[in-house]
Each structure stands twice: as C-alpha cells, then as structure tokens.
Amino acid sequence: MLIQFLKQQVFPGIYATYVNRQISLIYERQRKSEVDVSAIKGKEEEYILKLKEEIKIQFDRKVKIEDKAKSLLFIITLAITTITFSLNYLKENSNQLTPLIFIVLSIIYFVFGGLRALQTFNIKQFHVDQPTIDFQQNKFVLMPEKKTISHLKELIISKSLNDLINTKTSNLTYASFILIRNGLIMFVLFFISTISILHYESKTKNEIVSKCPAVKEIKKQ
View 1: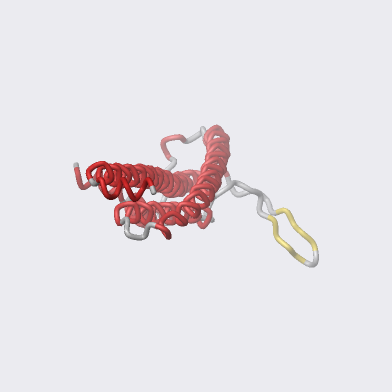
View 2: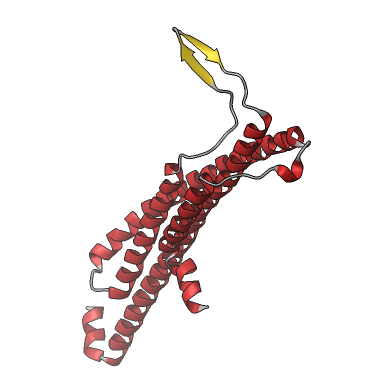
C-alpha cells in the first residue's frame, strides 16, 4: 500500500512512464490480433455505424486531454515565474538550508510536470475512419470502400487501439497534475519555513536585546 502510494503520489512521472510502456506492449499485441465477428452476423452495418461514432467520441476525448495538458503547462509557467522572484530572497539568505531544500524540490517537481505534459503531445498515433484517396496519373482518385466485414474488423481494432492511446495520454496528464500539486506543496512549505525562520530570528534577537542592557544602550544611541 505504501509503495503504491509513493509510486503514484510522490514519483508519478516515473510510474506513468512504466505503465505506458506496459500499455505499448499491449498495443503491439492487439495491433496484430485477429478479429472474430461471427457472433454479430447480419448486423455488420449497425455495428459499423456504432463504432464510427465511438471513434469520433474517442477523438474528442483526445483533444480534451491535450487541452488539459496545455492548461497545466500554463500553470507551470506561472509557478516558475513566481519561484524566480523567490530566488532573490535565497541569494540574500543562502545559509537557510530548509527553505533551499523546499524550493529546489518545488522546481524539480514543476520541471518534471512540464516534461510529462509535453510528452502528451508526442503521442501522435490515433486511428480514424477516413476514405482512401490515391494519386494516379496526376489526379486524386477516391478508392472504393472496403468490404463490410473488412471495414468492421478494421474499426474494431482502431477503437481498441485508440482506447490504449487515450489511456497513455491520460496517464501523462494525470502525472503532470500530481507533479504540479507536489511542486505547489513544496513552494508553500518553502514560504512557511521562510516566515518561521524570520520570526524565530527576530524573536531571538529581541530576547538578546531584552536580556543584555549594554545592547539596549547601544541600540538607543
């Protein structure tokens, strides 16, 4: 249970990469698989229409996932810009180790979150139903549609493969989201630790002044 939690919530990028490799193996197996449609004999046209609609829905989902990835990249850009201003404080207080650790972890999480979001756009495969167009003798020729059974089998494979493709992109987007969340948590901890240290140093300084009359006298002068 703990190991699973660490994989998904602390190192989601690595875990997403591992899972997507397993999905890629399944993808290759299914791409070469045979299709048996004997159970729906006589209803091929009906299922072809259903599968075409399903593939359209899959494509719309793919676009939505990519839009989410774009939004995450925008959030990362804003976060890193904010962190850049925070680095000025660390330059003046480089001896504060705890805030430094938190800000470094925050930057690492944001960078890897951005990488995972970008990887979403690197998954180019997607199977759509479209007519076959050939170029012959300096003109485009629209080829006749495949036979019903062949078309149905092709659509079944396409839908199955598209499900795997969308799962891979969803895994990367989710990993990016978790990495951004962790980056924000580290940045909040950086902010809290910074304020705590400043408060402690100020309190300590006031206590020294209150306990040492000589220091108080110098302060008055």
